[in-house]
Length: 351
Ligand code: PRP
Image (cartoon, rainbow, N blue to C red; front, side, top):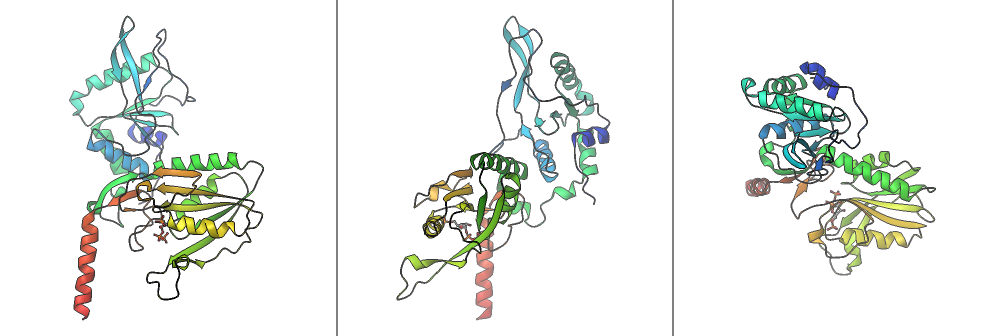
């Protein structure tokens, strides 16, 4: 199926909804009223608790088409008794790139009069905002048109996923913010990005494109010796299995890692890289599994601090698989047990 770009216009056109022209985002206040809309959950980093399964599906659909969204970010006062707010309305989604609020309802067509009234009222009080109501019929049409099947996860059965920690849109938003911060911090300088293979692949590709300074790119790969034998000292338990091509001396080196757990890998690499006399050396890590830290490492830029769980996706693997999932998720314990059982059966079968 062709994957059309899902835009607010497409949503509106496809569903024959009326969308008022886009206006630049800005503070919205009720005419003659002192109360600005209240921020209820500023940005949807981290887990989002959805009130309804249809909202989960809608968020997935938006993620699939890389449409950024915030869940219930703002509450709008709609009614007052003197200075006291008597009625509030919190639209389900806000799509920042489209500057569009979306209210989703799966109520029967005959029962949505109340919703329509709310939308009429919100448009009346806040004429600057753009909002659409997706009814159940609209919603199913949307799924049918933009491919319900296409949002299925094909490389990993959904039943093997315990939970999704960060969606593609959330990761993209955070990577863009890191890129902007790094670009500002390195004003007037060029950067040598050094990625630690292999998990860093997607992060490096996305971050490099979010950095507006001149960059050069190089890679390192480390491997741990599993069974150090006689004559193998501690330091040689970790070694470079692929070294950088570019001479690091005098360069502003930014070392990129997908994840830091114990900190042992990063500690080894940093020690080695300082010996090459770079002009500066900083660390940038997308996922920080802080609970597992054994050695403190001076990471300057961190994407997300994550719980101590087995995560895969966006470069991270389980036995070399699942790196290409566009999100970060926790694998269910059953997957390990099943795989372990299968391997044991294989070994037993082979002997
Ligand atoms: C991961 C990650 C880091 C390391 C961090 O590498 O890319 O290099 O683990 O763990 P630590 O803080 O406990 O040292 P992995 O060995 O999984 O290799 P990969 O990147 O090729 O998947």
